[in-house]
Length: 306
Image 1 (cartoon, rainbow, N blue to C red):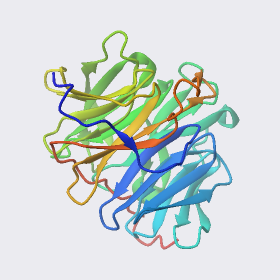
Image 2 (cartoon, rainbow, N blue to C red):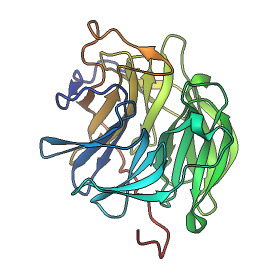
Image 3 (cartoon, rainbow, N blue to C red):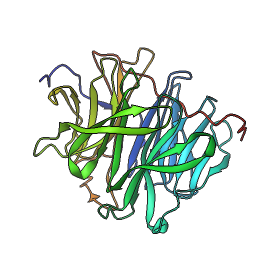
């Protein structure tokens, strides 16, 4: 395992979030996006300038769409489209219907290679087993639960051939793989491919590189680790320098810059000592030796223009 090949990750700007998450790169525009879940904010950084969009409710996910100036946001109140030119938002779909909906919020999510949205829910206080991982079902625009009784739904990545889906429910400290059918959004043959070592924290958001290796942010672990999902072994470690590491994505013109979001803490897990870790809540960048993969856009159903 290599822990010395990387330079020290550095903040991309002066922004400090309470709970930065969902860091995302748009290769079409060379734009970096991320959210502050507890600050109700979307950030968009392009050409050295960071723009801030204040949102009406708590965001869990930001995703690209086929229109490079529109992003999809999974907010506490449902799915919305946001225009990055004007900041205007437009309602797209309601929050999934559930018995304790008022106590839930969205967490991590991503579109799959076919353009369908996958996004998890969780209890506001992190109560066990209250969430689900949903598939936003194509032409019907209905939510269909694909993994139930989750606690902190996170991760999400697809293999280069589109046939394998990777996912984590963070408190389990394991990453699962499923055989994936993109036509129907169905999952099968569940297995554990990575188990997080004791003392390394919990798997949070992750991404996948061009060699089908997983790069996993470690909440309460202060690092991003590259894992081989075939063997389950750690291959590389990037020490970030703050404890709560939340997500990562590849970006830059050559997809060899890893962007890493971090947090000062969260409502359900508590907050760090900012005197000790003053860079907590920053988004960091670091160069890697391996090329990453592009993010998939959400494709609105045929005939849906809004």
